[in-house]
Length: 389
Image 1 (spheres, rainbow, N blue to C red):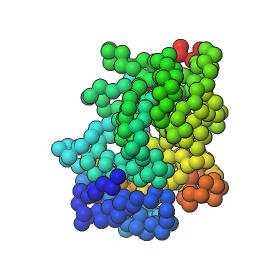
Image 2: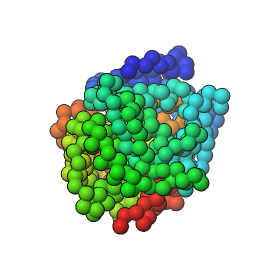
Image 3: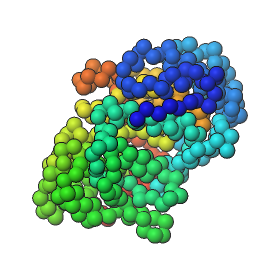
Image 4: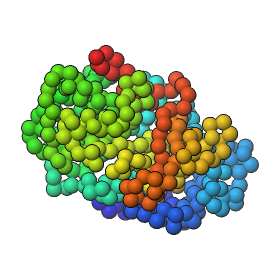
């Protein structure tokens, strides 16, 4: 699925191009550190030049690009918080160069407005290509049925999760697609639990591989309802796979441990554990983080991950809990190359996973604090009210 992409300005973003052209997601991370730092310098200079807001932010912090010489120095690059994009729209490209506009929220709540130029979104998509190829999930000769636990979209939809899940259908030819969150005709969505169970039975009988993508909460409630109704387990095609995203977030009171959830999927649908994966990402930071076979989120070559103390923002070491901080030079459209998320996380050395991937991995421990901001998963959780019993 090789795709030649060019940065908007090859003279200014030479190393950004090099980093984003990497096709081996987890190889030689440390060997790329020097190039990665140069790429971060390039992209920071890009945003300082192209975005007046970011230029003023850097000036207010007395930031100088000459300070950035090592990977740790990248912590000095002025960062933004993910929730900043819920109330502000900032661009580093002319509006005419906006290729795609996505929002992070569902039916309610404040929405992050994220704008992509062609390089940025296609670069992020190419990263997903590389990861799917790494795991041999690209099967152009094998048709699949799809169950999407995400919002059924209208042609005008700007919703990030729906866009992502539809994008993921390109790796195997589509036989049929079923949306668990149906359009109601009045601008809203409704979770079709019984329809989801019916499609489980139908697809198991048809015998094609099934790919199930999207919010875990809806998937879980469909499986639970299936058990309560006394419907016997089915056996999906062994090449079926689950790729979750969005997290439980607002459904903490209903969430179950991931290993228990995966066991339930294995029990009710017969899909092997190693074909059950979760993905972590957001419209504010589109670099894909995909679980390994041991269900850990390893850091790919296109980004670096820091954990920041919740009070001082000082960087923390392995196994310590703090804010999740992503840096990546891939994004030219907005100054979102250094973003601190609202998630609490910890970073761990590669060898403590045991899957064989040579890069560190992070664990997500939930959201920090309580906020009025509502994410896709939280908006989706509101559709579950009354559906769980």
